[in-house]
Image (cartoon, rainbow, N blue to C red):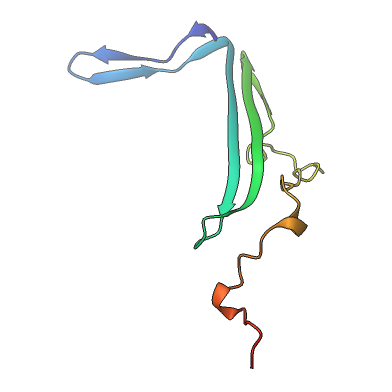
Length: 117
């Protein structure tokens, strides 16, 4: 949203163009993003399901405001924040299945030996 004069390029005959900068009394830019991801793992040879993380959701926002010559930013993006603050560690991803009951997929079937003599 912009209240003021947007940047313009005014053509000047035989001289090119003159760039007029933006003159904003008030300006706001808002961005929101959402992502959803799931991690699945399958055994290479058998194709058996080994692990599923379930769906993980992520959201972020970036809001920029300007009143006359004063501007400020509100964001939760660490790359855009000026001050380094002590933040909470990211949440841990927990498996949706019990790891004790998972099949042993890293042991080849031919390495098992039968009793005999």
